[in-house]
Figure 1 (cartoon, rainbow, N blue to C red):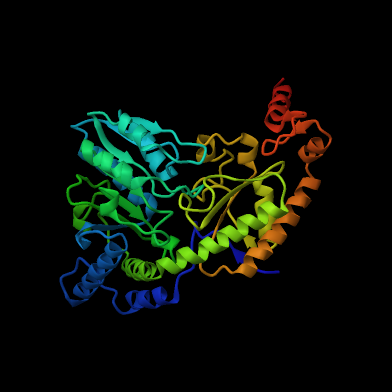
Figure 2: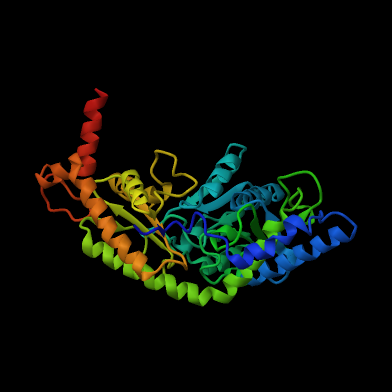
Length: 421
């Protein structure tokens, strides 16, 4: 049995070069960056270098625009709440896409309870926004627009630069969540027209426990953590120096290897999707097809008549690690808000898996996944009453309707209604 890891969006293995760079800051260079002696100075130099390395990855103008946090969630919270609080005298209106990451959506909901309002921009069935909708949603009271670069669920690449130009024309700061794209796609904060950008190195072979927030010097931002004056007074707390050093090295390697990463994962992504749709009936790709509108690391699949949890567990038993929904919401019984936003049938949303590729994956891995997953689907369908009802003509397929029987969603609604009575 092979061991195939296809959950790189949740976490990636630490590169040996990154680990080697971090080690001395656990045992030798253990000083506090706020200290005035030589131990503190040595650590401050390491901080400066890591800022330069992470700034270079996203083409920031200066390392002074880089702030280190504990992770992507904290960066999102600081971006959303920090800008909202800093600009509340101007207005209390936000604009976000309907498919943002939970760290963004929950931050917005927190502010809504305090009197802010928010316009949520709808997406197409592929998960893409229309920049004109963003422009139309901006009012004189709008203090922030939030649009992610790549969707964490379905891999859709948003037209961020176009949105950035519209925001600049209206004088509204733009926050771009690059958690799913950093280290795998080119990012240029100036081309984006972004005031704030966040990303995390644990998604591109760096360490956990550190997040990066870029802030353009002209963007107003207040702290949401109060204590010391670390990170220019924007983020209090002793810096996680080993992780920050690792983040810098991972960013430098990502910038150097970016073309190879994109080419490698694009080849495997196409091979995987072609193989799965050839060997499995009634399987659907959610989001754009592989190509310029989808990141090359992501496939989001719905397999009809079976649930995602069963697929995930059997994949795991066969040595294949995948995800069923975002790692931030996968413990919830609710379907992904992203899949709901693209109008995906509820039954298909429940039969959902996310497969994310990395540099260590091989063609042999992909062929093993195709062969094994086809067997898993066949096994689960043979155990599924829904599949039996489909074969007998009682219910129909949503993916490829035959025009006979009820759709599975209609059937499920009727069963649910009878149970309620």
